[in-house]
Image (cartoon, rainbow, N blue to C red; front, side):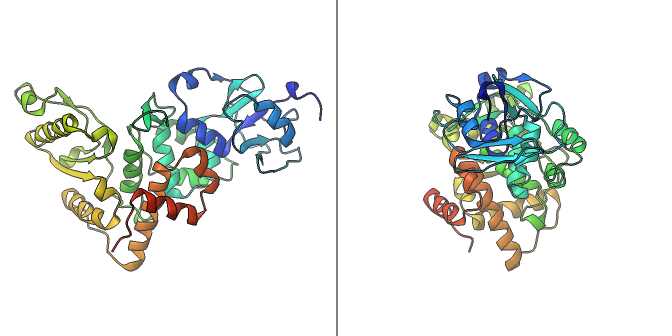
Length: 353
């Protein structure tokens, strides 16, 4: 097999996806740009891969990596290899450590287009373009960082990846990706709001996520702040949708702040529609919220046929699973419906009635 220290491993697919979902700003800052691509000296056997990643954050779960198209690849319970042939663009990987490279956010989005549904891929795109990461050590389950990419950068990368088999699906999902989300729930709703009805989405008109609004001086006492950044904002319709739920919105102080925030938005002339955890965990309860948003946007509400209801509920389940399940375990079970149903039952999700 040769000297492992002289060979490279190119991390991709679900391993890279988990990295980008959970990496702190410090971890990302340590990555360096590179022109390196999988080639003849790419690691392509499980034993070599295990040696290469020993002691890194990639060593404790199945490792997914890219290998050159000229190499024979092997799969095992701990390593998975993906043949990339000649369609990977220069700059698609970043250097993580000596002889270890990781797919860029754009390349990872392409990789995951081969695995995820359109809805989950859109939510993942929102995470990459958002200002947070999943942090199991934090009380709220998340922490802040700079966006690792943007819709514009993702689009440019998809357009130049002409031979990648996930390209078409990735470009389709990008139509439903938004910049600027601040939490997994915002990413869930951003995708669900924009996705077309054929995918179970609402197909609402485009909106801005966390766009800063300046509160006039005479209303600042009422609002309790000089600027307000609503979760979802439709400028042409003076409509704001806010999610009130989860650890970041709990406690009396936060409740009072949310109330002042809502008063300030209403004083500014906005229609404010609120979603809470009870709505989130029940597609049936969400229907009333969505009806209000359709009305405020002057859009025709989707029909409520049995097929449409099933699509909507299926999408909502997928996105809840994506937002809340442990990212280090869930990706290997993306299509394990039994596991997903058990998770949703534990989380308090209720079927639509």
